[in-house]
Length: 98
Image (cartoon, rainbow, N blue to C red; front, side):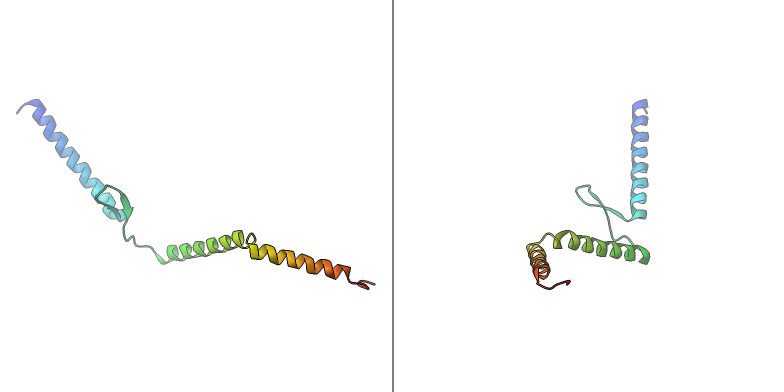
């Protein structure tokens, strides 16, 4: 057997071992590779604490979105305007504070 043939066989064996190690690593972590080569997490098992934390973060995001959008909506601006007009009328009432 020539030297190049031995190098080729060793390279093929090393490549195969590397592929097996990668596959084992992905399987242990629940990583799935689709036909296009894109990696994603499969049905990864999450513990209850992680699920609770994710749900808490989702609730926080909902609150932040509501805060960011409610104050800027037309209805909120109209409510602020009407409230300011009412306060101005209260301040103009005769005999107030006397």
